[in-house]
Image 1 (cartoon, rainbow, N blue to C red):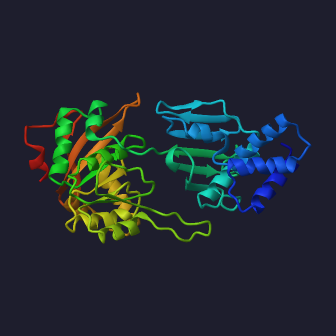
Image 2 (image 1 turned 180 degrees about the vertical axis):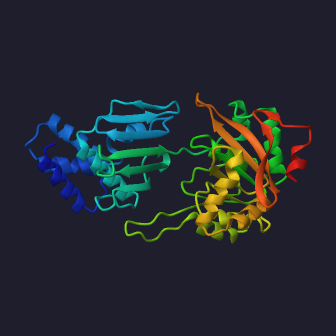
Image 3 (image 1 turned 45 degrees about the vertical axis):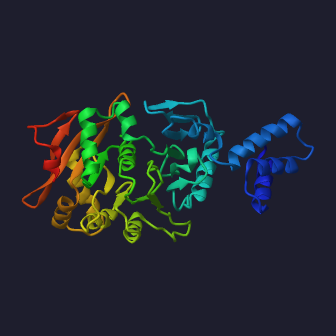
Length: 380
């Protein structure tokens, strides 16, 4: 496709009232090409135009492939994909740097973000891209990225496994299953910690599926990953700001709205900022058995991580530690092993020592720590 034909097709699509779907793109190419191109050339032009104007372009097959968790573009001729064992190069190629930049800007606009020389980076959720539209894109343009436009895609798939299936997959054994059952049965508020891709959301979804069917669960999230098999599960999703920077609805506001919906259990998909204050306030006002996921390198680091997040909302250190020990009973730490296997690695209970929250380990790598004191007694 020549640059002149490309621009004519772009203008035709821009002036049309119909969306830029494959059919309208094909019609635009045929209308603009006229009789100047043979049938094979027209088909080739249609393919190139679809890559330019529809969905994720040449990356669409990778984002839709089962098992793919991440896709990276570090250069026009270097596209990598990760299926859980580390990034591997693919045969996908872009024509040039400008093609990568055009795709990045088009997807950013579709996700409600601005991406240009004045705003050379963007982070957004992409509608209608990948499995059920759960793809997060991060883009960086030159000169911030001196070697050329860099794209990073995270493919988020619904977490639907139950506790029985996670046990069969080796995430935990018999003692771990008994421990998790006690967490749900005794309505203990919990945090699921771990690194990126460790299985935090998967475990949280499985725990919610084990909640008695008569209890109402209200969950607030960014991406709608949690889809437990539960008859009274209600989901609220955040809304990003538009290209003008207006209209954003964050997790903190949704937590406040969720409290008005009479939840038996309040859940936050992931705490990443000042919304932890609203969550802790809710857990300290009679909403027992709630849960949340949190990025942390170990269970012991959870109080420090919560302290850092709460400071973003203006909560002082001593107040955070007081609220944390009053609100949360259990920390469930997930770890992803080098071979890609995810497992429940450590469990601890929160205790207050001279006004400071500490996580006391009670279970590690499949075994109880210390004496035979029951987990229920330690978490009570």
